[in-house]
Image 1 (cartoon, rainbow, N blue to C red):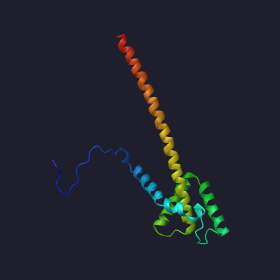
Image 2: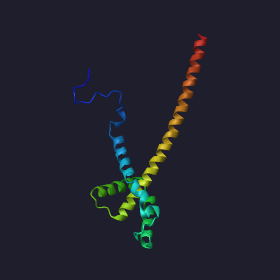
Image 3: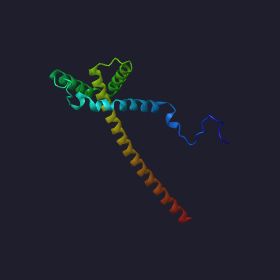
Image 4: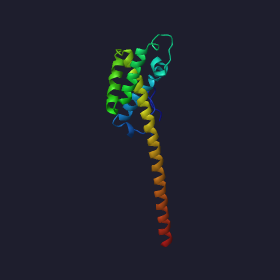
Length: 152
């Protein structure tokens, strides 16, 4: 039976257990926020070291300030890094970020993306190990069952 006109068809087979508490969705929203600013991070005068004639990259004071921000972000603990990221995103939504805060946000996003990639790699290794151990266990169970069947 087709659904009434204007109503979406019933979707079946969709897995919902990963979204029950909303944490995965929130994590994806945060990740997409960081990705949205990656273009700016790649084209930033401070981050890439380019000087596009704006005069900003040529002064040594700004270079030292930028390096201080980079060093500060590098030294932040994980909890503080996430707190600062959310503070800066809130300020960006209110459109009150100054240029140094924008640089700090760029560097935090880059660090969080790197940590996400590292975590994904660790999970892939863990999953591969789990599959290997599972296959070994299944093989040993099948071997024991075969011996049991042949003995009876």
